[in-house]
Image 1 (cartoon, rainbow, N blue to C red):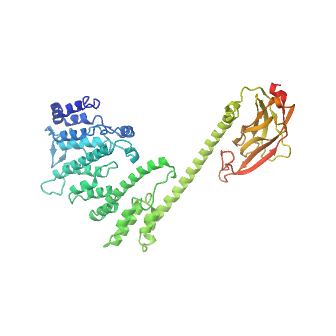
Image 2 (cartoon, rainbow, N blue to C red):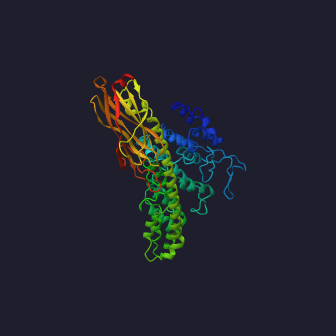
Image 3 (cartoon, one colour):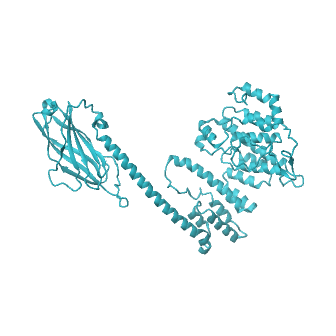
Length: 550
């Protein structure tokens, strides 16, 4: 094992492949011998999830080695110990506990253990481990698959899947009983189940047209699965429903197709969140996995009642996932409502009403969580903006060192204020070339305010000119925040005292009638919807001496 896994040195691998010790080990202890070649393969879903995104597939860097390993394994004739635990008795079935394949102890739901009694069985077990069908390899999107390898590499992958499929088919045919060529032996049944599992596997790369030519005419289920890989789903369903006369098998096929569609939709939803929580992706009429089966069932010419009954049964059993409207439109117009009411219409209405209630509750919970998080974010932003050095818009001005800060004083409206007018406290911060006016506002009622800012409408001296305004984007009820107004100053040109005509601007937002929450919560300045207010404040004086710290 260590020699095989030693880097990617061809000499080491050739030595293992050509060594007599390797052949002897495979013949005397096939289970242990296989571990030489499978020890580096992912053994469970978690390991596959780690390997696949890196593009480190077991065959990605050793394209010619799998073929060499398969040829070696096919040439092996294991020495099956003659004892009651491993002998194969056709009449009594298989008892293969000691030599059955458990290379990784996989819990992937394998259909049955395959006795390691032939080179074919060894090659099958190796290839199943290599491609990941026996070790729980998860489905991945096509984008992930296309991130590694080239056309030659994908050709190698296809050849390996084809080799596995043909080995399994060979196992079925070679194990037929002598009495009846169309009856599988116990070992043949294992090979057939493995073949069907491969053909229906989400990551199968078998070439359907190549394998189709080799299939005997009696292999109807296998042919149907290959037709499905070619996208001919209705032809596949005709085999299940008409030739095999099994609605159950047809439903299983549709279920498998639906699961594959759901896997694809997972990766699509990562790109865009356009699906409601708890909802199921029903898609259009062309994408619904169950509508072709309804159409096939209704094609019954000899027994139309049987077809209608089968179609209604499909609607009833898969009412949660089928496109209900499209399915109902497929039914003949003469089908009475009473035939649909109990099995489909009533349960569907109950399901829809229940889902509607669940979505309403989920929407309310998400809305409450959204509002709570928005409040927390807004309060954190307001708290940060209340400290002058933390305001990003002011950092770019290079204000310099502070010279003087006045005592806070309450701003008073010049006229009668509205009910929404907040409590405002003014603090003046002086720098060598700037005056920064801090307007600390606190809402006085249960109403939130947007775009709260102090604006200098007019200055009596050209030595003080408004430069930058930093508003409070949203001020929730009973919360205190600070807006900032910066004036470019030329203290040497200031003659005595300058008078600033100031206004308080704010917007009362529109409310959500259901939650009493502002619809434009935490919107950017200038983009809010609501009623704007402008309150004129008493004038603010700026003295020349304040620039000197007096």
